[in-house]
Length: 139
Image 1 (cartoon, one colour):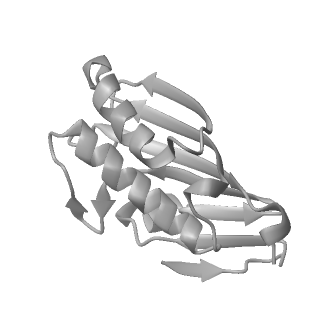
Image 2 (cartoon, rainbow, N blue to C red):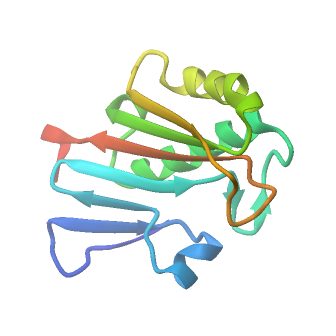
């Protein structure tokens, strides 16, 4: 991951090296004030998709990748206040929910799960977003 303080010291952006960050012009995570938002994160690491065909594994790796982005701001799962999960199949709700529960069971963030028609790569079954609150931890 790389970071950029940007034009304002109150906003900091982190890049993960996703193949789409450069071509689409986005950051993996942005901190603004006491909020840190991690955008749509999949189980890709570079050009390698982990858990192909396995929604549980894709969700597990996607949450790990999202939490790695939060780690760039000194935050972990306990700082997460909202999660969003996007799935391509309703049949995967339980598998993805199980992965979410393993990561956030004691945290209990506000959560949304939505079934969508697809993603930029048809092998992706799950994409996640997380929002965190850093409050007093803010630098």
